[in-house]
Amino acid sequence: GSGQKPTGGTILDMRYQGDTIGCFQFRGTGKVRISDITFLKGATSLSNTFIHSTLATLHIHDCAFLGFSALSRNRAIVLGGNTAFLSAPDTSAEMGFQGYGTVIENNYFNWISAGVMLQTYANSIVIKNNNFWNQCGGFAAIWFAAKDDTNSGNVVRDNLIEMNEYDYGIYLNGRSVSNTI
Image (tube, rainbow, N blue to C red; front, side, top):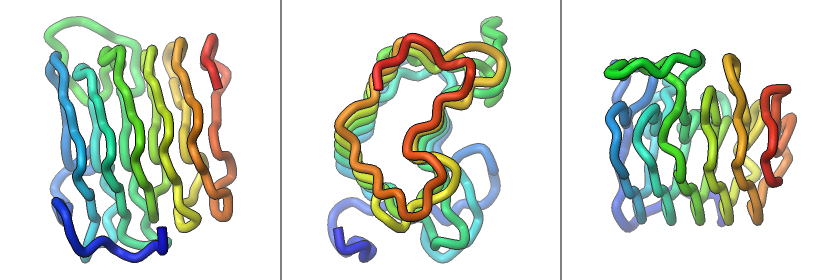
């Protein structure tokens, strides 16, 4: 953790600027496993999210999420949209999250605003053993942000969140119930 950009391993330099929702978007059902990748937002200050999912169950582990700079921190992972509709086959970015059983573990975040943002119906998610380095910052490292319905049954444990630039390490809004922190 010196905060330096990585020089080896599998690195995806995410310079894509065409979509403000997310560089990787998962709108279909199924399971997606993402491991041992460094997501790097190099040479651009656009604040795209790295990963956005509404339907897929994700297992994201042993990855690094590195934003562009302290002036333009990116969101790493956003689960779900802002509305509580579940009518199939709707696959819009605003659909509530249905990837129950998602696990986000053993990841490293630097120059990130929200590392994990849980929106409508982001339930039964495990977020553990992640490291938010001291150059991360913004509103919250782990943000329960449901607007139309609850976030419930989630487990958040054993994360290191350096609080130099965050307002909150973990923020649960009024629609967050029955979670284990």
